[in-house]
Length: 271
Image (cartoon, rainbow, N blue to C red):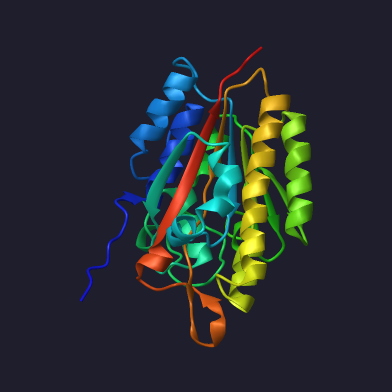
């Protein structure tokens, strides 16, 4: 029987990575940050902290998709300087995983342990930033986990009906230079792969679109944030696998669902 191999860097290390980049204290229950990301940023920014972090959260992008369809990630590879394989959490479903990403805690600590979308009471990246006078914003589609579980904070939420509208708002927000942490969620690959299957042509086209969104965000940061040190993450929550009937699913303890891949880029100020 083949041994199942899981990545060694936990998704829970993302929260403290974000706060460390921005120079604020981590959420109360957060795991330690990812050292290599901080070292890369420190070198890129000549020892300074980041002024802005942009978190692009495409849903359900598995490591195996990157391995099998690397060409579809060309827009990400061309606009990132670091790629890391990460291990998601169980159950590998959206609200659980994003709660762990932004609290830095495992599900038994932050409290969301199934596909439910309560407002988190656990300390999050957003709370940590607000305490220290920084401004986070969430841009998401209506009804999705990110638009629900982080509510009731003194921050801005922009909730739309489509990924296209979310992406347009993210462009506006980057140009505005108003926020220190910008979280942009796209659930279009997840929705398509559930209906059509992870490797269906329609699903793979959406995956390529997600890569293009990342490239566009990179170009916006380079053009409109020249006087800031900026970090850009390509940061999915969990993976996916095919089930009977050719549809897609996730939520199991299996490499296809747990092993994900994150990409990072660092834009030092040029003005």
